[in-house]
Length: 293
Image (cartoon, rainbow, N blue to C red):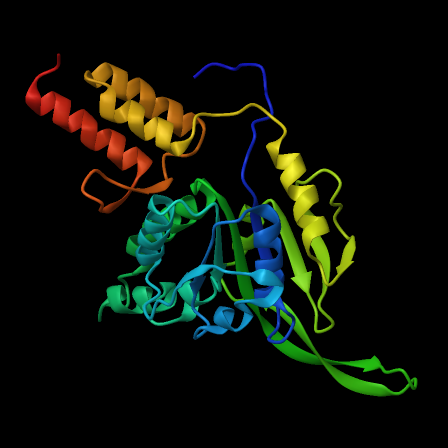
């Protein structure tokens, strides 16, 4: 791999919203989602909470309500979302894929075994990374919510007296996972969003938005759309289907890896969930077994 001139590439939004219960994470995620696109899907781990907002602001969206939160299951859900053409996916919340049923912590416990010197992390970490890669490489915009651990602090009320106030602290997920995202917004109980990290020009770290919505989504969309347009996932898939030599497919695989979309979730020719890199490798095995033309 050689050095080359850096270029800004058009991209899709990767937004993480953190906050305690009652801070408006689901509503804010939907507000941003409909500011970024029209065909919205929600992976709802919160017992159907997103459905409470159907019809508000004219919102209509599709949803899935998983009861198991194994990391690889989220890859499959995203592959099906891509196959259905959703331009925005909300994952509400990603915290369940850490501490929920079949989530990371439970997977590690199951695979550690009776031997205290055997660690399940070695087995489960690659599955977690595959999940993260699928989120970051999804063909559309992705917005996740993260629950935060809660504690009470003493703050002055309107009368100048100290009273306990519930605040969110640390997100419930792997340490630092939120920093994989381009924009992190921390919500409080007044539905005020404070930007704690931003790669988006015009959306500065530390800025606050009271009841954030379309104006924030517009700033994000405008910045991300400005840049070199890469082939779409559908176009890469079509190329892989049409190429007939191992060398051509290897070059295509290297290209998608350079653009860090080899982990993009998708459906294969049989409608089964996979990722783009695995699809190209499978095509390589096909042409090798069948004889290169």
